Image (cartoon, rainbow, N blue to C red; front, side):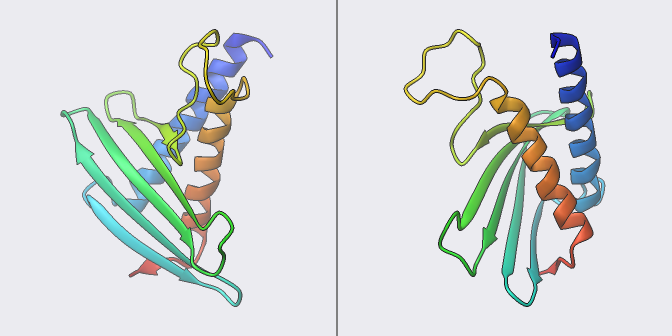
Length: 137
């Protein structure tokens, strides 16, 4: 895949994530939010906590928990919110940041498209929250 197509896909995903997060946080008027969804098999808890760094740059911590399992019980996303560009991008997921440079030496090697994968996974999580039966906790 060409770098141009990768970049376009990444920007599209980050723009869509911005719109999803904007809906969940009521046009970013809600700074902290706790949601829950109860199904026949699972109980999901979601917590959003935002911090304003500047007029255009915020940080959001998203914790997603499946209370009925011990395998991958909690996912933690650290998300950069860029209001001027209307983008949301994963800064780290479960403490692992995607490689900033392809030639960077790392203790734990990551896939070439780690950054893209993390942002697509965030898109799926936000989509599930929007389409699921989540309610205020």
